[in-house]
Amino acid sequence: MFGYLQPYREELKIREFELYKSVYCGLCRQMGKDYGIFARMTLSYDCTLLAMFWFSLRNEEYCVNKGHCVFNPLKKCMLCEGKGEALSFAGAVSVIMSYYKIIDTIHDSGFFKRTLAYMIKPILKSSYKKAAKRYPEISTLTEKLLLEQSEAEKSNASVDKAAEPTAKMISSLCGIMSNGKTDNKVLEVFGYFLGRWIYLMDAADDLEKDIKNNNFNPFKEKHKGDISETMIYCNEVLNLTSSQLILAYDLLEIQEYKPILDNVIYQGLAMQQKRCLFDKYKKTAKGMKQ
Amino acid sequence: MTDPYKILNISPNALDEEVKKAYRELAKKYHPDKYADSPLAEKASEKMKEINAAYETIMKDRKEGNNYSSSYGSRSQRQPSYNNYQGSQYSAGESPTAFSYIRSLIMNRKYKEAENLLTKISSTDRNGEWYYLMGIVCFNKGHLEEANNYLETACRIDPYNLEYNEFYHKVKNSRKGKYRGGYDFDEENVCCNCSDCDCCDLAVYGVCVECLCGVCRHFS
Image 1 (cartoon, rainbow over the protein chains, first blue to last red):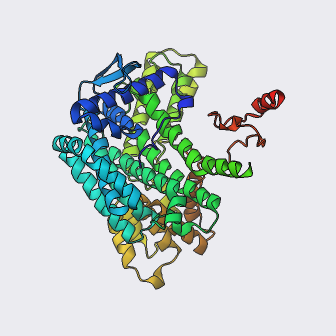
Image 2 (cartoon, rainbow over the protein chains, first blue to last red; image 1 turned 135 degrees about the vertical axis):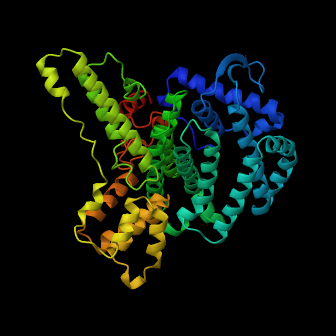
Image 3 (cartoon, one colour; image 1 turned 90 degrees about the vertical axis):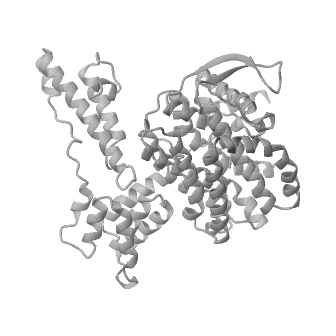
């Protein structure tokens, strides 16, 4: 479910891309400080975006300093440092959601994935405890999400009902970001459709695999054998979702990081759809021809 | 009121034409039709009022405080055209229907109550209008696929109904990606058809790279 909220780099100015990277690297550093070195394993583009939204919506101060990469001390990088909660909050979301994902994998997956999850769980546990202590509301929301998700899958839910748990969770997370200055309702609606988009993007990307392994997937019902036809349908579902997401985004008062956030919302989402629903299958077809 | 120039996102030195252009772009962005039945319809309406007020303030100030030539003056007196939107999509039906009360609930944004009443209606009374109104309430709560299916059914039952077709047409356009931010599969630039080179794997989405392929072929 992670990794779909990316900028469309080709359209970012170089200084904007460098700023984006500085938040990514700054988040990595802050996660290590707040929740321990293994917390950094869970770093993702999605939580980088979350941090930028927090900076922007709460008008939090930050500065960008020169530093060195934590993993490769020889590599210089720019590090964003926030004066407030942005990076700590985003880091907590990353750690907590990853930890619960590991537990979910232990319960639901086959032998190899389950074994891997068993090995990773103790490594992440102490990071999870620190993050959950600081932000217990994130832990509660994530637990609720997994429970509702599991119920939806057992009842063979429709597209809308399957996406609902993730949509509601991200909606609540976005609501937390508002501190009275930004319109709560707009943020919650934005979060709802963003969560829905993420869930359905993940489902569409995993459809082929889920059909093969006989796992639940809300798009299975529409699939009649031709994957490319089904991908056109998935693209329509995602487009309708992002159209509503964008209506909400337009009502947010984004100041800081606006060019990057605009890029992710107006171009990044569409490019992910193109990549995962169409280009992926073109490559396979090309490979088979050769 | 906040600085009206800030609301329209223009400099105080902008020409009248620039002010009008900025106003038109914002009015297009926050037009009530785009937000009809969205859970954010009220917020968008407030934003629209803010934009209209900013535009009127600027134009009034300029008229009173400046000596424009007559050609500028006559243009700047045009009234903003988005001022008096009142959710006209429901005025299309002249005679009251069995669903008039439910429609009035929807007009007053009481979508949950409307949905409750709709679900109580027996299946024999579920006509095109029922499916259309169910489409609206589902759309409002974010269940977009259910909404799409209801609207599709409404248009199948009443294929000549303008009201149902208008909304369904908007939904279909969104599905096709015909807006800023959507992925329009039909409009995708077709790359050259060469299967030998990997130039199409270059991250230059949306640009036909035929000319690049010409170079590749030349060198290979």
